Length: 96
Length: 222
Ligand SMILES: [Zn+2]
Image (cartoon, rainbow over all chains, first blue to last red):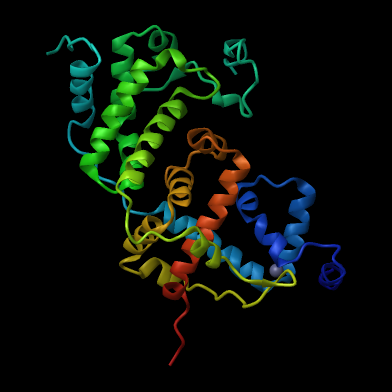
């Protein structure tokens, strides 16, 4: 099976690393159609380079997700409402 | 599901995703009525401000990197949204439309006070993996899961990397990977195609990967 995929790649019938790389964003998003995904995964199974790269790519996304939170100032929304009352004929809040 | 009959008959092109049209926005005090917002109801708008300020503020701070400036951009965003409410076309979620206004203002402010030490587009291009006849030139290293989790300044490293990205790449990373908006929503917020979002996202992640790579490799054993 691996031999067949390697042969197809060599003959230009299956995607190479560069082509596979172009599809990474769609792949991790689950947006690839079934046929393309099958080609993609067949290549991943036989190519150490792409497999390592996909792993790094996923970890990069994960680390980006875990970047530190931005602290939100106290009364942020209240300040915005005060600004709107001053600048947009926004009525005063009944609470004051 | 409730969206079908609410689609703007004038601007009839259906959105790509069913949930892009919404008649309500969920808030802590219950859903905000879009009809009330469109009719200029201040109470409903107040609820929108209470509900969206924190998240929108965080997005703006990540784009421009300045808290005080972000606060005034946030205020200006809500002011413009309030004044332009009648121009909302219901082709997207109201929040997507609101964020598009905020992001535009943030980027305009960024252009005025150009950040230093940001990478050039060509540098992002050079940070992508190299291929020869369609195959990887170098085998990518295996990252060490222990280093990835233990690295104490990891968050700082990642944040610095994101900050260095050119504006176009920086905003897709913030919206898609940090705030986790869908590709379709990000496309609408930035007024580009979903395909363009994926291309920019892919390059931005590739550049970040390159910056992280030297810190994440498995240490050679003694
Ligand atoms: Zn490969």
